[in-house]
Length: 88
Image (cartoon, rainbow, N blue to C red):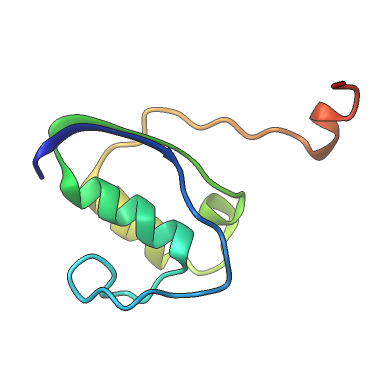
């Protein structure tokens, strides 16, 4: 990897992008972008992304395993569905 940090809101959708280098596992677009970010970040760098619950809750652990092989999880925050109901 070559960058020090990646920060973003990954795209969502029920599509898969052809990317033999960074998506050999044919993961969903949001997991693909996280995995690609990890590939492109230097050791000791930081990746901070917003993603859906499906990244951590998916029944198939393949994408999570690939992410785990590329970096260490520092933290995760999950909001409950009603968390923003009172926001105006």
